[in-house]
Image (cartoon, rainbow, N blue to C red):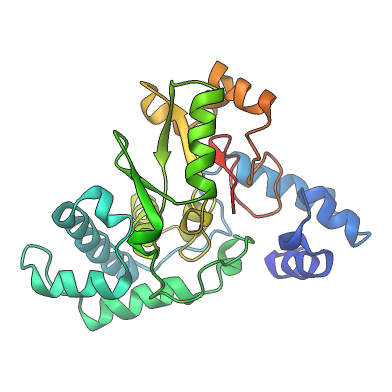
Length: 274
């Protein structure tokens, strides 16, 4: 059974519309393939491992990937970390043209970015919903609020109110570790992960929603524990008293749990809003 077979089962069973686990995908279609389920769960539990059937860029594409990642990194450092979270694709191109320290994106680089965005993510193993369908979609600044001492934005309304409630009811030791991410920000995160791993797009998609698929663009956010650093994005966070209280009170509605049918690792820090 290959990825295309799995996609067929996902579509039939409505995995992206509500199936809660990989097992429920097969149960809904009255299928049983314990070997495939084991292989699938091995991949999302060992998300940073390389597998033989992973989709990887060619040597020439990896060189192009490196140039694009460096240019996006220069863009982020030029306009600022927080502003980078909200910058749109057209804005990014304008900034690059106008700032020599960034340098204009070439036609080849632009086509590569568009290809990454519009490629069907199921081709490299991510089965989640695409919530932003155009690369030029933007999160309007007036619809967001910057959260002090975090460097991140939240969308006004339910996400902002939920974050305040979590801080009040759970602990002031809870902090926002990732808020709004526009398309450009998600592209940068995704491609940077792929670049660090030899152009492996499948590996990147097991840790990060591909561009256009991140719910951070429409309301979801990540939380962590003050002083916990990078451990907030590991399973160590699930062992903290802050997480346990979040779970017990009911604020944690995990979008990507241990055996989710979307092809991505377990994310205990991710607050589901949208």
